[in-house]
Amino acid sequence: MSSGNTVLITAATGNVGIHAAACLLEEGAEVRALVLPGDPDVGRLPAGVQLCEGDLKDPAGVEAALDGVDGVLWMWPFFTLGVETAPAVLEKFEKHVRRVALVSSVGVHIGLERRDNNCHAYLEELLRDSGVEWTFLRTTGFMANALGFAGQIKKGGVVHFPYGEAARTAVHEADLGAVAARTLTGEGHARQAYLITGPEVLTQREQVNIIGEVLGRELGWEDVHAEQARAQMVATGWPPSYADGALDYFAMLTKEPEVGSKAVEKIIGRPAHTFREWAEEHINAFR
Ligand SMILES: NC(=O)c1ccc[n+]([C@@H]2O[C@H](COP(=O)([O-])OP(=O)(O)OC[C@H]3O[C@@H](n4cnc5c(N)ncnc54)[C@H](OP(=O)(O)O)[C@@H]3O)[C@@H](O)[C@H]2O)c1
Image 1: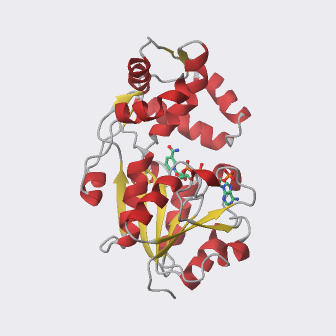
Image 2: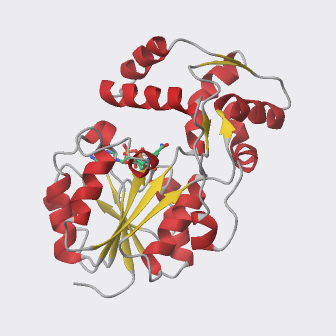
């Protein structure tokens, strides 16, 4: 088992992985990225990251990337992957690495997601029962989820989606990446479950208003029935049970807004980014 400072990131070319990789490099770690063969997004990773081809559906292939690795940033793209190979992948981690930070979910933190109805709760349970030092990063929705509205904003400027008044503490993916990097390079994070949120509570409608302000044009929001959104979500690849869970959660958030935490600031020593800052960085995606 390694005692060095090499970190493997799974789902590395996604929203969080690219930021986590940059932060890990800044913290002096060696960084390996597990990427699918032919992943067109490898160019999003910073220079200096070592690419290891592998598929999370193939635990033996993942093991090939683990030689000399000390820690893993474990992200599991369960929409496309299911959870069948997760226990075998974790067994490979146990053979090689000292610690694993898992990107989990606020739903586990507040007891909505359980082992029988959600992947994050299941992965947490596996890790808790494993021999590795674990850290759970129970994150709220990403600010990048607003990119899902980009098509409608570009086309007509009115977003049609349910529950405009659902209020979340969305987190900037760069903040989550920075937290992940710190928990994997610093000490004191073993057996900790952190609630990772942004610095403010905003409704979905308020997020869209901010995007409009940054764009310099007025945008609208029109609530549509949850059933209509569900059909669209399922048509674009959401497993039906996850679409139901997400929409039920949004309905709840119209009455009980998410509650933020100070974990980002405490762990990385600077305030979390606001949604307006995120919108300014990503505004070209909405033009
Ligand atoms: N979005 C949210 O609001 C939210 C909230 C709470 C928790 N989370 C958690 O955050 C995690 C990270 O999210 P993210 O948006 O950064 O990334 P993601 O969407 O989960 O993952 C995308 C990445 O996974 C890769 N990938 C897909 N199938 C793979 C496979 N079989 N083997 C290896 N790699 C594979 C993709 O490669 P290709 O591009 O080549 O397909 C891409 O690099 C998620 O897994 C989720 O559990 C998200």
